[in-house]
Structures are given as C-alpha cells and as structure tokens.
Amino acid sequence: MRQDWSHLLFLHWQVSPEVIQQRLPKGLFVDSFEGEAYLGVVPFFMEKIRPSYCPSAPGLSWFQELNLRTYVYDKHGKPGVWFFTLDCNQWLAVKIARSLFHLPYNHAKMTSEQLSDQLVYTSKRSGDSINQVFQYPQKLTTQQIAKLGSLEFFLLERYRLFSQRKNGSIYEGRVHHQPYQYQHLDRTPQPTRLFSLCNFTEPETPPMSAIIAATVSVNIHPLKLSI
Image (tube, rainbow, N blue to C red; front, side, top):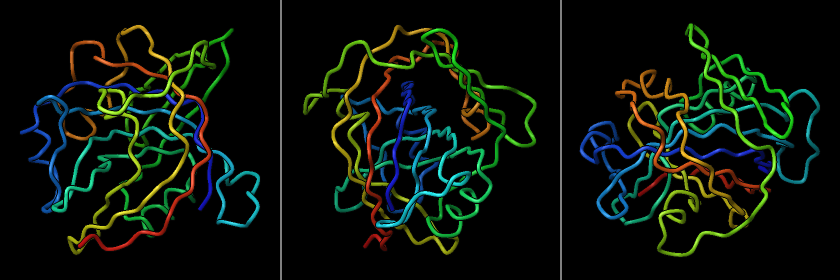
C-alpha cells in the first residue's frame, strides 16, 4: 500500500521496561535506550491511502489516527513498533486493519481545526466520555534529521511493525519512507488518556520528549509470519 503521514506529533514518556514487557506477546522483547523504555502517544493524519498503483478514493483515503505504541525487537534482534491501540475515525479503515493487519484499531470520534499557526486535534474513543485535545504547530520552523545512535533516532526511525493474530502467531510488516524531518517542541502537559484506556498508569508529568515531523510518503509492504 501507499499512504502519506502528515501533521505528526510524537509524545514520549519513560516507562519501566518490566511494566511494558509484561504486556508484550511471547516472542517480542521491549527495546530500550540507555536502560529506559518508552510509551509514545502519536496523533497524525493518514492521507492518500491506496493500494500500490491505484488512485486514492475521496472520503475513504483521508482520516485521523491516534496511537499508543512502544518499541520492541524479536528473537532475531529485528527492531520494530508494537501498538497497544490505534484509534481512528474511518470505520472501513478500522475494519480492514483489524482483519488484514491484525492491529488493535478502535473507533473514535475525531476532529481538527486550525487556530492561527496551531492545529487543534481532538479525539474521543467510542464508548469513552473524555476528549483528548492536542494543540501543536502546523508547520516546522526548523528541520533536522535524527543522528544514528541518538534518542530521536531510537524513537522515530522505525521501519517495521509487529502484530499478533488470535492464534498467537506474530507477524511483521516492513514500511519505508524518507527519514523524518523533525523539530523539538517545549515539554508541556499533554493528554494521556490512551494510557488508562490500555490499562497503563497515566503519567503525571509532561512528556520527556515532544516532537513534530514533516509529512512523509510511505510504502507499506505485505505482512509476513515472523519466524
């Protein structure tokens, strides 16, 4: 598949590696940076989603997504992303992602609006009563690429996702895009509702890292059994 990811906001909190490991399926192991593990809250927009060599479909190929993720590796040492939830406001995308990619997508009501140079991004999980409101710059004013070995590289440059079927089998899917052009933001309080929705303790501090990134065009490769 092909798709664009835009208006990306990466918010990360440090979480005990042992706490995260308890929530991972057999065969995956929590990845850490200098002994610290992370949970990331990532609101963004999915755009121009379509099968390779096919056009996008108006009304179906654009939507918002909000996920809670961590970083893992498999028994062969291959690094990737593990999602605890992916909230989305496109019902068909939820259905397809659950069935074809075995990912924990959830329905949500989501809106966005422009406020001067800021984007106001709102999400409320279906069945939940709490709105999550993120406000962040629409555009980068400075740009840089993460250096190999840096924390930013650890958090941003991930090109594999893992998922699990109901029978317990672990699958992996490769993604490809140009390295993120990113910019740090001030560390201010941010919504952490996804933590409790996924049965984690909500942090009481601002994220230790807040980053926005420019739009990337992404190739999504077919899932394959991780062996």
